[in-house]
Length: 619
Image 1 (cartoon, helix red, strand yellow):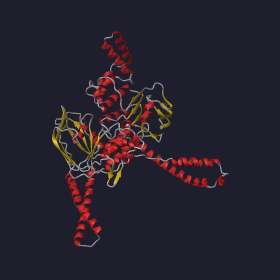
Image 2 (cartoon, rainbow, N blue to C red; image 1 turned 60 degrees about the vertical axis):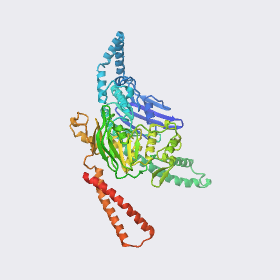
Image 3 (cartoon, rainbow, N blue to C red; image 1 turned 120 degrees about the horizontal axis):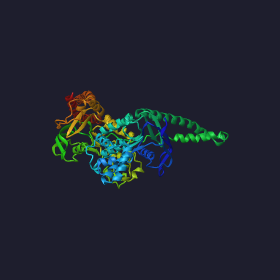
Image 4 (tube, rainbow, N blue to C red; image 1 turned 90 degrees about the vertical axis):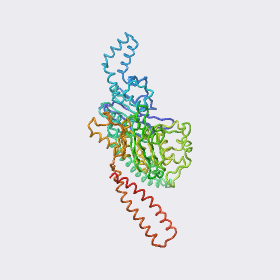
């Protein structure tokens, strides 16, 4: 099949920083390609070059004649005063332009212009265009088509831009982070549309389920080179692991050869004077290759948090509304130690407001919160970092703390701490307002975790983080000893982190589902359509959102391990008590150690017994 797009030897630099060099690949009609790379390696720049918005330093981008291209940027620009007008203002679609011309001619009562516009509409066969546009807007969640465009949220703006792209029906779609700011329902709608569409696709996204289910090829940008894998994201991960293993083996072979050649080169010049010049040249080539190594520059997250007591956080009959919009209606819930909760719901249902209410950042109308004395919140807000944009990165962090304790006995300076979040000494001198989206996310995460919270609340933490950093954050959260609440549209992220989900259905209704997002989605698929949330009016929207009396898989495993732990701890306590009663003589340091351990055992056994009782009630 002929190429619909060809890139030949594309290079791009900013100053002395090379993003990528000599990039060459072709895209065939019907290909669905995902581009992955770490933040700052040029993914968005490459898409902008292909879309013709930015120019390359060298090389050529060639589309097949007649190919219509649709481009979705991360932050789409909208014109028009209402939702419908902005959707109709579609530079990618000449049919939309014909409709606008006709509407304007009618409004101006210009008979000649109206006749010409009418003829154009007839020729293009677009008399049903407005009806189809209204239908698509409704499918994507727009109830009020006369709503003010300037008051739309980020998710609504993205949905409106997607509507324009869908209506244009281009031959090729170029999408930059299409799932950012979208709710899960819209992501699944877009996923289904792209799978069915015959359009060729080239996109950048960190949504791993989206990549896995939509793409048939993956392109990785790594160390200023590109690597192409035919297959979905899962296949790419396997091929990448094989590539890195092969690189490590090759590096070991080169270094072994280099050691032998180094001995030869170290001999007296006269001993090798007659040797072949190519061997000397080959030595320097080996030396250069040996100095190259695959460096995984990963964010390093230390799993430390302040101690959390047996009493965590309770909500009793909490109510909150804004005018006619109900956020919480007699919400009652008790958070348990180590709980990991995901929150999902359509855009605008009140997810972010809910977690602000939890922290006291928004006042409640009635009811009460009861917080444990040891509770320490760590809040990652989707509004971003609240630091002075005119300050340098290192200065802003130093103002928060000049000595950062990761966990007991480990202290870092702000400069050392920031390097764990991939801020080099040079990057730390950047002003905050100059940081990229990914850098701002990493800095925001660093400022949240440096306070050693024991109750983490993360509102859309996956926006602008690259796939590698997301994986590291997932590992950190899965081992985190405190409580975690996550609002996220990233289904893969939710599946790896949470043990149950709050589904916010609107009108103050919260459904507590035991399991991760995929469990919940599979459950919905078993229901008749009329029983699914949001598809029929509910007679009673006041639901006390208490967690069902059912253990999750993680809780069952915890319950089993607690029985064994308690038996061991009680046995250890009895052994120490027998020792103290015996009057046996030992040195003072050992006696002190055993006494200290005995004093620790009581509270530890009490704590584990309380947790065992909590779980045994569910059993």
